[in-house]
Image (cartoon, rainbow, N blue to C red; front, side, top):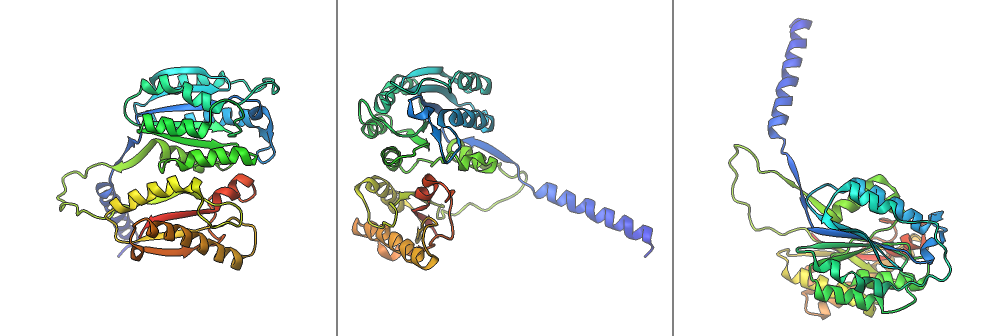
Length: 350
């Protein structure tokens, strides 16, 4: 065959392959997971302090993160609002989501206010959201940017539980700037109330890919469009994929605490309702300590969760317990918050 014929044949094959790929490719659609969202910013004195791990003033970092998050949120017909607490103020009233409107509201967040004399009534702030939530119908994502350092007024954890009780379609997500034990405890307890929460680590969200994934996890899902001119057999009723996180342990701890039980109870309901036949319970640790020690610790954490589930009525034979040690961190082990989030157990379908 001549060189010219070989070139023509190669070109024709390439064109045919491109055509096959184009025909076989399936378009995708973004589908909203929620109908509404609220960006709720802690305006307290402690948020005006510098975070050593971020090397930035916390409220300044939160403002910049909101601007970046707003750029990633697709316009899928949500209703949105932006508000602050400590003190409470509505920067953007509930309305159909508009990037420019949210950006304008975010730009109104001050980052140079006086620290002293500003208490942190986080519980009162959550209670003040009630009139806004009452205007929404469907599912609502409440994203709180806070260090959790509540020191005045109603208990924020109790108020968060009250919101879930009154508005069962609300899901609270916390982007945590906590840098002391009290703040971390408040954040952890709010996250543990419901399995729907998506953990937000501000340092990790500095990465563009991590932020994009966070926005996707909270706001929308990608679904394939129905194939065109193609006959398909009916889909069988198969096991759905379940990943359940939000089970975090103290340093060098593996015992189940009361604060973890709400998350475990949610997991138990999900597992019992699932069509999946088996699940893997994965234990993880932070980076402190040797590989062999952390391997054993991660196994003890996984076994603690599996034992709790089986003692509350779940069939133990459906659970496969695995320790991953410190080999699969999800968060930055250079920060205290990241290490805390890495001390976790995850449950996933096989």
